Image 1 (cartoon, helix red, strand yellow):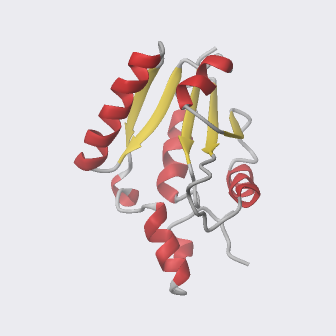
Image 2 (tube, rainbow, N blue to C red):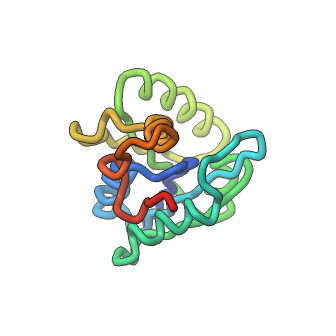
Length: 151
């Protein structure tokens, strides 16, 4: 069984993330959307809200599982028999950053990183941009799945 983890903070999940996950479902038997918990980071949405946004967005997709984890992604992979880390690339800067992480992960464990290019129509979307639009009362709904709504 080919299992992949798609790690991130997903604060919140964007249409770019959504697109990567939808496409990954065709490549893997299971896609684990893994929300990394970092005590140092201040999030706009609670862990439970982020989990719910993702679960609701993929409620009709049985191949998608949503979990949270702490620590190294490769440790999660080893404990859960996951052989692939899935990452999305928006631009050359993403590639350089992600390449260094992929090499480090490969040194730490026998885990392969698989890169998918984001769709052209979502390549400009980042969670940080979405949070800024929300903070400034802009129309964020064009940037996120329908499951993401601010109360």
